[in-house]
Image 1 (cartoon, rainbow, N blue to C red):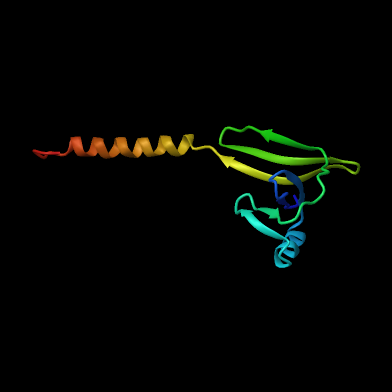
Image 2 (image 1 turned 90 degrees about the horizontal axis):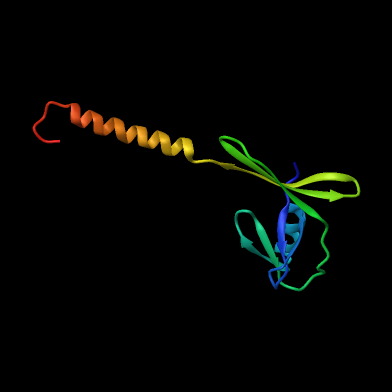
Length: 115
């Protein structure tokens, strides 16, 4: 999977994602600024063309994680532009509730006058 950097026009309209090398060149030349750290997004300082290619958001729901990918449907075929995994918190919440229950149970089972 090739990592890409999201690009915004000065009016905050989205442009096609670019390679990290091109993003570094734009940043060092002063033609762009960092807009957001995650997902890493840059905003151009001068207006550029508004042409873009068709992108599709693909989602793979799972029991523990959900996968997301931006796919470019180009002339050469499909290509993954950006991918991420979203970890579900269901199991973490359950484990924390079990730990809390165990602490409460251990306090109640002690032979003390006060809990």
